[in-house]
Length: 265
Image 1 (cartoon, rainbow, N blue to C red):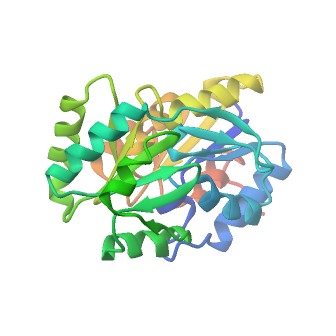
Image 2 (tube, rainbow, N blue to C red):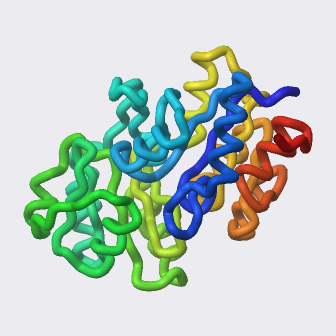
């Protein structure tokens, strides 16, 4: 069945290690879009962080941000917004504080953290978005309209246990998933890149079998499984590879093989 929609993660997938779009990926996306394929970005990033990449690629399709918690058009129209419950935000923050975990909060597409730590500065550099240091009390005061929380662990080996602890302590209140070696995304139950992807496809009359999803991290697993063709990047972990149908070196390689049958311009 022909691919009518491509849904791609950003970091580790569409972007290179320098957080820029390689020319080959950019050219492949533009070629696919020109052929009538809907190309959608699906990321854990903030909407305002993802938007410049969509513009660089020439896309006017909706952007799936915050792992699916916020879907907005390139023009700024909100299509869906699934924020965390305020009580859950307060409780999860207290839970993180008690364990001295680094946590940052996203309210109204604005980044907040307690203090400008190295973790905060590294995130700002990667995302291209400045944050605001407001102290722990300032975070607790911002428990409404929160798209997600992000925990940054000191080492990758600590992530799996922390995710299990969060999901057990807040069963039915939140979902915690890994998005990078040391990153844990905390989102509302039922929110995922897959759910947002399928909703957008249905609105356009596109079936799951006509979707190619591309990703490299734990928060991509849901959409790799839900798409007719899930493609993991070669840098992906074993769990992500197992969730995919295929493994490719790049977005450009996947588009050439599965959209254009191996043809190159």
